[in-house]
Length: 394
Picture (cartoon, rainbow, N blue to C red):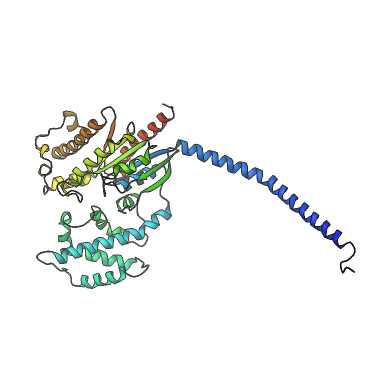
């Protein structure tokens, strides 16, 4: 005799069918309720695809330490202002960078011939404190730390060492931050846009940034490895690029190249530029040439220690056109000659490789926010005009 209750099998099958029906109803309800968000999601995908198709693809290339990242920051800030949190993030980095500058200066002072030491012996104890403090994990750059840094910087012998800054392994922005120590040490210090532009962060890999420029989507890629030998290998990946920005550090005319000891970095930049404009992938693309760091070029030329003609023999007989001499006011003639000579050398390269193409050039000091503003407006106009031409709007 079965131990099952009468009708047990019926009850079980009925419950099973009921559970299945409930599951079906739930699925129907889920499908019904998911129609609206799915349509929204589909629309969002379509909008993203349309935005990608309208996206302005730009690559920024040029030799190391030419100011590529600074120009990218300027383009991003054209429509997108820095918020409080972003400024606060850079405060600690700038104070840490200031300390690294002090360490480099003191090390150069102690290694100088004849050897120099601190003018005030108390600064040696402060230096030892900073060295220990610097290597602490997650250290806080407080008011005492900033006072010690300022005291070492104001030492007479450290100041004398800084006068030889072109001979030392110092970034060109060192003087800018050392002059601002009094502001940086304030407990409520927040870096300005110009402070962040001067702050140097080495780029170790190719980086892409997406942002809006005049309400149009832009994807900008900074190229890091730009050896002339390997240039053509990565150039093919940027077939769809619409604008190429090439950045040159004009103040590097007296610095020898690390890849070719017979050439300066400026001459090396000209060779790299030739490699860029001669790539078939980049034919009929807009090229914007930034002859950057004009402020540092002028400072170096007026100092008179490094003569430009010692590195470029053709410069001795060079005479700029009449219009060039009066294009920019209040600049020494020698500086104007050098600037236009450099530009003409790049023009020659561009005409040899792309005789029918237009080369847009700018004399720039990208770290100077106000001075760069007019150049920035022209650059954005060129980029947007290229984008409108692509879609037949011009």
